[in-house]
Image 1 (cartoon, rainbow, N blue to C red):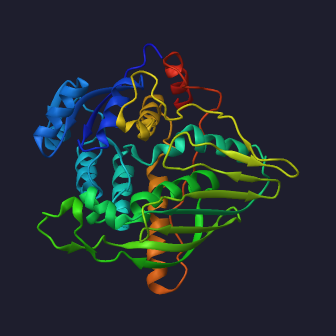
Image 2 (cartoon, rainbow, N blue to C red; image 1 turned 90 degrees about the vertical axis):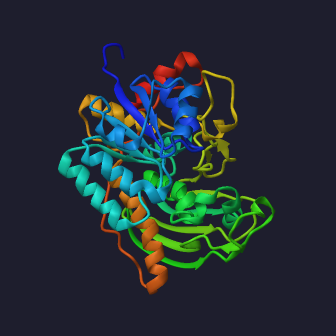
Length: 392
């Protein structure tokens, strides 16, 4: 890796998720030169700069105007994504954004067109799909170990209204369970099975939520998380497989997740796609279920500092580094790409539209996703750059 010019990068948005992004972008990936942090409120940016030793504190406008910043990592709340991404693209910056892409499909489509017109890279989370768990599942599928995929079932439940007491941004667009958490499941489904050609769904909104003990002094008496908060959907994939999806944000906060892929030769149990290194379990005919060894690095464990409370977010930032390597090597960004992000969003939007109309929805967008090269590991600091070679 010596001699490769690092990609000078700025983070915009210094909320909770910025902790793991800033730490990883500064320490975990050779290709990233994290030069600046920015936030609408300067105090939050100064705090993160001091904590992690970042060179500059800037405003978003200053980032857009900075000639030396090539790549912007957008960690603002979903409602701010469209404005920030558009500003940075118009300023000639490559952009990687946290999920969701935007809160409106039409806005996401506009940003994809803008990035194409300006020949800029635009990447979209979730990058958990590049972690050890999902990449190992992809290796198993691509090797034909479970044969031809016939069906898939995924589910996740939470009390999203109660969560909105703690994380107040969930009361805004993009805060409902399918968009806030379901995107990890949809993202992993698409990374493993490819594009969806038809979506049918039933859905229900969140209830009006009265203020509880956590924010008893809040000025509002009640609120409602916007959008569909519970959805049962059927998916038809282009590869012929069918799938069922259940996202329930109107139940209790005792999370029960499931992710099962059935094939003609075996069954694959994929771990929680909100994590980078949940176990992958394989069942073949006449044999007991086994936990399959990881074929890839980035399992979410910290390898260069003592664990901190935000280590549960694991290897966040892989998508940024992978896109930065695509930029430096002149190849297409075919992993956490804008096309992938747009298709994820269109599948979720398709569920909402199908539930409204009672008719199937056919996504227009398509994407291609290349798997990461297996055989590179990240289980210790000594292997940190070995794992990064899988991103090149």
